[in-house]
Amino acid sequence: MKQAQAQQRLLQILQAENKAMSAYELLEKAKPYGFQAPMQIYRALKKLSEQKLILKLNTLNLYIASVTNFDGPYQILTVCTHCQQVQSIAIPKFERCIKRSLNAQKFNAKCEYLEVLGQCFSCVSAHENQTILK
Image 1: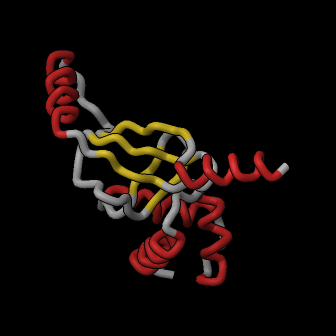
Image 2: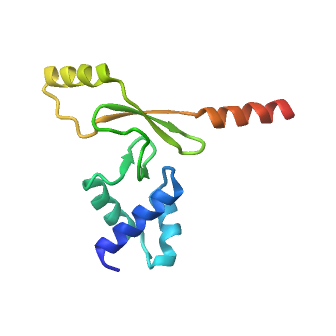
């Protein structure tokens, strides 16, 4: 399978799943398309990341195709550790504050978003409902 075709297949899988996924989860989903080894997946993920078609969530080592309202650098991404749903929170003053602070430190950021781990409303509600039913 050609590299561009492999990248397109992985992007389609991530878009269809609509959640963050590990490279090994992607490998399982991509096997019907001829993927055999983790290195194939990692190579394609690296290229997709470089092209900014996907994001790598460094805290959980997961990948996601798109994030609702992700408009650029210095945003907050909420990541549900239960269902792997990711949302973006844009705070205009946050971007200015971060840029100023990084410039004052002469720091060159490699990752321009902050990942906040927790549980989304749906997962918290489901857990509370299960607790009530017990």
